[in-house]
Image (cartoon, rainbow, N blue to C red; front, top):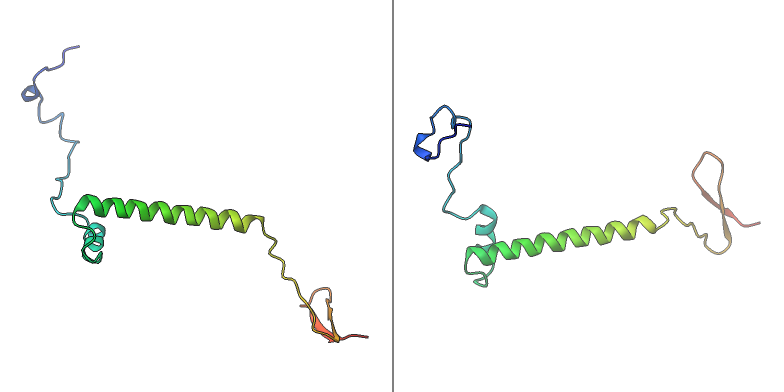
Amino acid sequence: MDQPTDIAALSEDEDEGFHRSPISPEPSKFVQFVMRYSGGLIKNEAQAQYVLLAFAIIVFLLSFILLINSVGESHAAKIVAPRGMQVYNPGNAPPRLVPAP
């Protein structure tokens, strides 16, 4: 295996397929939004990133809790008739209220 040991010895042909995008010195739009509308509570980029991470975790947990709670429930509607009426449930039609016999 004849590999170059010096970085300068690498040819340009070997490195053509690998391009790195430059890192932007300004914060992302989400971070800027959090910093702008925090009312002065968030003073730097790191704090804004922690706030966004906490928000994402809270949204994920809330979604998970709502999903778990909705799986166990029965979604069949319970129809309660008012006094003096009864629910008539024909085969292929929606239920109806009819006077009680």
